[in-house]
Length: 403
Image 1 (cartoon, helix red, strand yellow):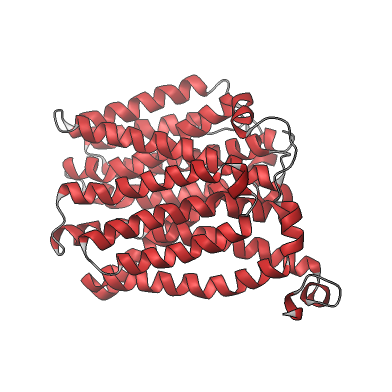
Image 2 (cartoon, one colour):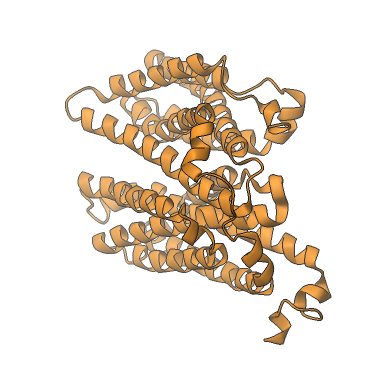
């Protein structure tokens, strides 16, 4: 046990405090992306749930609803000072919950899958703010975009990984995908727990709730325009990912149906990762115009049958969504302590996820009585108008260099 003690002559002293700090930042970031990869692994498997496991449309909807409900409730709870001050324990618990959820999901039964999705939501909620606090504690401002970047990295890895498992193992992927994810979580948990234990004294100091004036809701209130911009960006990105495949399926455009989501995810991730580089070269950029044009091209592709228009449309929309969502979070949390970073990241995610899920739910309910394609296109058009209204006032990339 002395090896893991934080005193002189211990592990931190021998391999260097800097190395341990970098290890914590890297492992915490990987843990968050891995959590989100697990929650997104279900998406390619939904058709198998329907055809092979006999899921009804209601049960397919519940796989999304119970996950989002558990995620949002947990995120709101995690934004409180108590949970935020226990970031190391919260992140390790998130990985344990993810493994438990994987075991339930791997059963291939209705109740096992639904219960697993609930645990996936709880694990994602626990890990969001905890990982943000732990990364910011060692990387400072460089770690403030983690919550935005990590969820999209996880979405890409989880979706592509699950699809590859489906191609390789067929219907058995319903079981094998989650067993593999649980194994990777376990492999990552061991070094993460060791590093967090070695740095327990530093983390207890760094992530302890500080005496900063005002609560996290007051901070969001002072940055309302940035919050609105982030919400519009995330609603546009999330709802497009959910609605576009069905929109193009109804339009009889399988190529556009296949390309829309991958292109959006890739360019969204690129927009986030490339934001620091773009901030120096295009400081006045904010993506709202690009997003509006992207949505217009998506609508035009569905209306005219020119499916290839979805490629530039999805690329512009993904770039806008990823970059604007990250930029708003970075600006809102600039200069805050690691503990407050974690709380703000949790509450920001809760608000944006809730609004995005609510918009998709409204479309789904209205589609019981009205044409789905018309509703989706109207939804995209409204979002495009909102982006044009935000165009003159939305935060610019250059502000991230001097918030």
